[in-house]
Image (cartoon, rainbow, N blue to C red; front, side, top):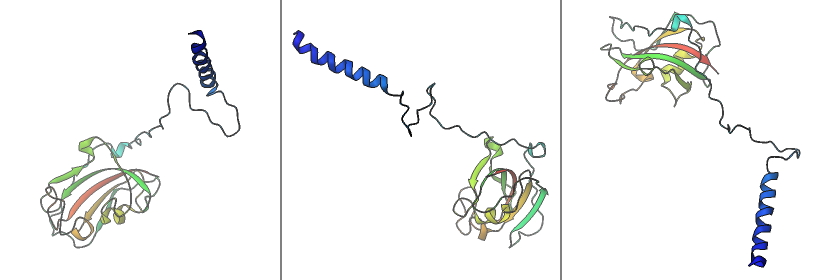
Length: 175
């Protein structure tokens, strides 16, 4: 019995020595994992909201017929970094239907700013055009015709086909 146990004990000791050597390497190009068990990447904190953008805006629908072209109006000019197509932006926004004033979406109602790439396929074309050039710290009103929003299909059930949309967008960060 002792002769059979000797190889098992030797293998166990060799495994223990090999495992103990792990993590102690000083060989060039070897990077050790962080101690304390944390290997997760840090999550960026939400950007600090400037005081002038700390309250949900009230969207007022004009009494005139819906415009056929994109309309952009700065309500509060920003002074920070400028948004450009292809950049990543973080915003708070409210979206309402031009026809009824009915709110269909809002980052404010989720208590969570919205982060996205400012690019076609990520957001509607009207956003790419209207937010480009906006500066961090700014609040901008966008009136977007159906051709630059959801077009003939809409986004049922909240956005009917051929809807003109109004957004008020607060630009919090650009990266």
